[in-house]
Image (cartoon, rainbow, N blue to C red; front, side, top):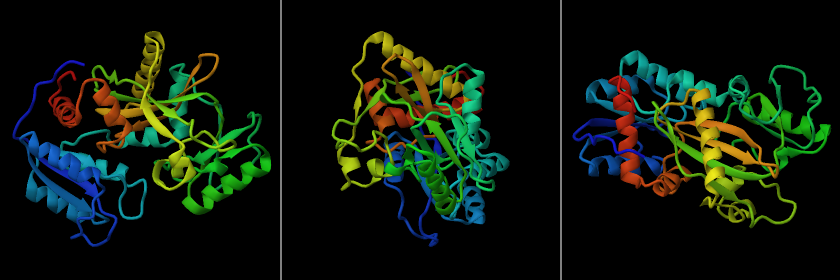
Amino acid sequence: MRNAVILHDVKITVLTYLDSPDENSKDYDPVVPQVARTLRRLGHRVSILGVHGDVKRIVSGLSRRKPDLVFNMMEMFADNIFGDIPITGLLDLLGVRYTGSGPGELYLSQDKALSKKLLSYEDILYPRFAVFNKDSEIETGGNLRMPLFVKPLRSDASLGVSGKSLVHDTLQLMKQVASIRTELNDSAIAEEFIDGREFLVGVLGNSPPRALPPIEVDFGGLPEGVPKVLDSKAKWEERSVEYKGTKTVVATLPDELRARLQKVAVDAYRAVRVRDYGRVDLRLTDTGEIYVLEANASCYLERGSEFAMAAVAGGLDYPRLIERIVNLAMERYNGKRS
C-alpha cells in the first residue's frame, strides 16, 4: 500500500455518541479515546464532542471548535440506531468535512436488500433472499431453500442475530421474523444460508480502494450443533460459548484465493459506494464460490478490531491506519486521488 503524505497540526474534532442523556458524561466507547490519543500523538489538535440526542449541541459544539475535520464516530443518535445517517446529513448541511461515508452510502450499506440489488447489478454473488416488511403480513419465504438465516433488514452490530437466526422450517422462520419486528421494530430479511469459510476483508481508500489482507473467522471452538455464525453473543458476550468458541485470525491462503477474495471485496465496496474505509463479509463455499454477506461502511476502528488487525497485516500499524483515514478524507474534500 503506497505511503500517503502525512498531515500535521490538523484541527480535528472526534464526534461520538453518548449512551447517557447526560451530555456532560464522558462514558465513551473505548475506541474513542484510542483514536483521540492516536491523533494527538500524530501531532494534531484534537477535541472530543460527545452527544446523546441534542442537535443543538452538535451545531454549537462544532461552531465553537471550528475543526478542519470531524473524525465521525457517531453510530446512533438518542434512541435511534439509524441516527448515524441524519447526523452525516447534518454535517453536510453545516459544510463540515468528516471522515467516512455520507448519508447515502450509509443508507445503502445498512439496507441489506437494497445493497444486494446493487450487487446483483454488478454480477456479484450474494445469498438469495426475501424481505418481510414490518408492516406486512408474514409470508412463507417463497421458494428459498432451507436452512435460512434471518436477521434485521437494517440493524447492524449483530443486533437481533442469535442461534435462533438459523431456521430450518417455516414455523421457525415466522417466529424469528415476528421477534425482529417486535424487539427491534425493523423489517426482517431471510437469506439462504451459505455454508463455508467466513472472511472479513477490510477495504481502504477511494480512487482506487485497496483491500487489506483477509481475516478468517475460526469457528473451530464451537460445540457440535451450535450454528457457525458471528451472532451477538459471539461478538459481545465474553462468557458465552459462542464468544469463547470463535476467534478471528489473519487468513493463511494461496495467493490466487487471497486475490479473488480481495477483488470481490473491492467490487462490493464500490457497488455500495462505501468511501474512505469499510469491511466486506464473505463466505467461501467448498466449490470455490465467493458470496458477499454484507458490506459495512465506516466499520469499527477499535485497536483490537478485525479491521485494525488486517491493517497491521498489510503493513499499517494503528497510528498509520488512523492517519491514513484522516488523509483519505482530506484528499477527498480537496479533490485528489486517494
